[in-house]
Image: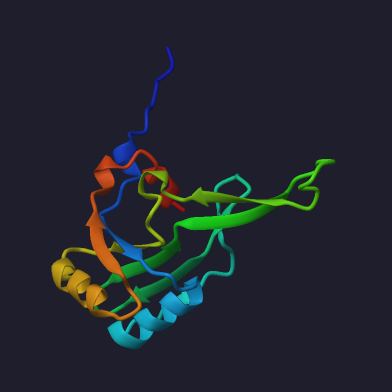
Length: 154
C-alpha cells in the first residue's frame, strides 16, 4: 500500500497585504513616484509576469531589509492590438484586447503586494498613497476573496 501525500493550498499562501492603485500613469512612472515619495527602491524585474496567455504584466520589486518586507508593484492591465483580416470597409481595423491579472478588479491599474511580518502600518501607507497627486485612489484588497489569487504567486 502506498502513501498518499496531499499538499494543502495553505502551504503556498504567505502573509501579504494587497493594495489596489488607480492611476493613469505608466508602470515606470508609478514606480518612480513611489520611490520618490515613499522612499522605496523599486526596480524592474528582468522578466515580466507571464501567465501562459498572450498577456504579460510588468513587475517591479524591492526588498526592505530594515523591516524585512518584500514589496512588489504589479501591473493589472495588459493591452494588445489584434489586427482583423477582413475584406470590407474596416480592412485595417485593429481590435484592442484588454486582459487583467486580477479579473475581479478590472478597474484597478496596479497592485502593491507587500509580504511583511506585521510591522508596517498599512492604514498609514494607504493614506500616504492617496495623498500622492498621481494616485486617484488606493485601497486594500481582501486576498482571501479573490478567485484568481494564484496569479499573485510567482
